[in-house]
Image (tube, rainbow, N blue to C red; front, side, top):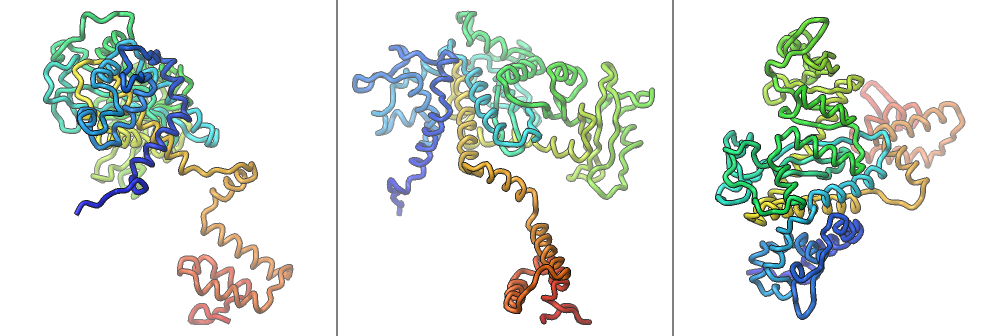
Length: 481
């Protein structure tokens, strides 16, 4: 039997309401205008009952499309097609080369990250995260700029694009701030070339040129665009592919510190006037008999640029006889702090998983035009940013009083066990000093409270309760008075 879901039980209605409210709060309409996505002409607007739809309404419809349980083609063929525009309207809208979708994502991310930054302490760690993920199009043949991309996950080359993404994280939230749908820089690996009839003054032409860049050059362009938009960050986190001496030097020139993982290859480093490879450094400084996870660390200089870096050797939990190496250009950080901060890089992997599995990245639209590839990817990242905004709005503590924030900061930093132990210690010291008088009824209430608590709480308070005279000891342990 199929259960009927009424209006009050329909979760999509509540999701749509929250999503529309977030779109208004973030002033997405004004951001679209700044990026040139503002026209409401006959070429972009669908005529429904004599009405024309603006670009803002079309974007809102496309953002909510993923929550309908079907793609755009199925939706336009259903009974709900009366509230939508024609298929050609959406096709022309997404394939317009004049719209700057990449800048739209960066401006939206800058607005959200600046707001999130204001909610946390100024000393909290904020970083950019750089990584890439393959978007496969194995069944496609004539997609513009489709290329042969090596997928490190499966260990072989596939047809598709390489989604190079730069994100921002504060350890609690992750926001994608810039992206580039990379093709291959080598012509022999591209199955289809870019259109030659596109105006070179448009954003579509610039996106096609950027898609054929080398990955390090494209990454530096993303970092510069994020910093120019005012996104707060002092560090950048990277995996082994990006953590090399030439790329580290380019990032340091942008004013950011680097924390990344190293490959255990033939890279050489200066130490005490001699050159050592990573295996030699590990033999000197990594203590493999150490039962902990941190085996050791050393401050060295890179081979050509002589950049001072700190190398931390960490035991591989999957194979404890091996180790991994984390590099930091900020040598003042402790070993544990470097490891903790590098752990934030996992947030971008979660972003890729959500975008592909839940937000239908690469599967909701199967465009042939490269402009549509960029715009559909921008819509997926926009959905992710809005969902993160909604999550923070619903989960963060809120109050109108300044006193609450001061008290909350103090209480939040104290564990429950420490708080209980301190309270009982204050009471016991007062009783022993004679400044606090405990009546028999109060003593009985304290005893009943002590007996009703779990064993781990009683173990924290036993010593103080004995000092306060609520409990007594004998040869068998503690005994109630």
